[in-house]
Length: 105
Image 1 (spheres, one colour):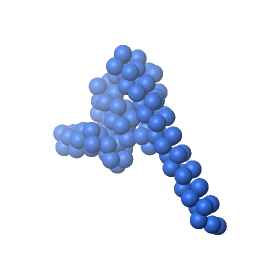
Image 2 (cartoon, helix red, strand yellow):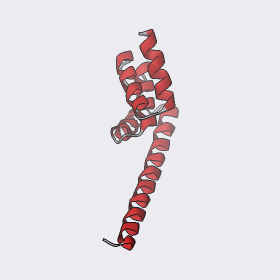
Image 3 (spheres, rainbow, N blue to C red):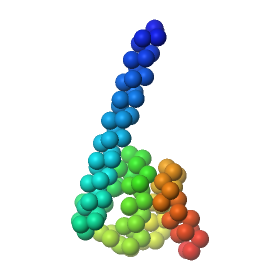
Image 4 (tube, one colour):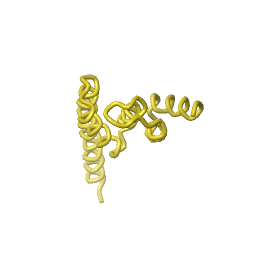
């Protein structure tokens, strides 16, 4: 494999990563909008879909929804589990809430 082929592969991989990130950001914004408008079923669907794909901030929002019972049955243990997932993916808000939640439960 030549240097040119390697360079092309690197560029294609980078473009794929950028495209995937932009798509997730658009979906995250849709979820946030639905959440802010009180459309909790739609927000939960979007956030959980993104969280399953490894989007850390989406884990935070799912945790929030479980913590406050927004569109789901209030469940602090489930909220902490979602905050933990976000913290494991290095989301600072999730990390803060996970620490706070485990120290108060």
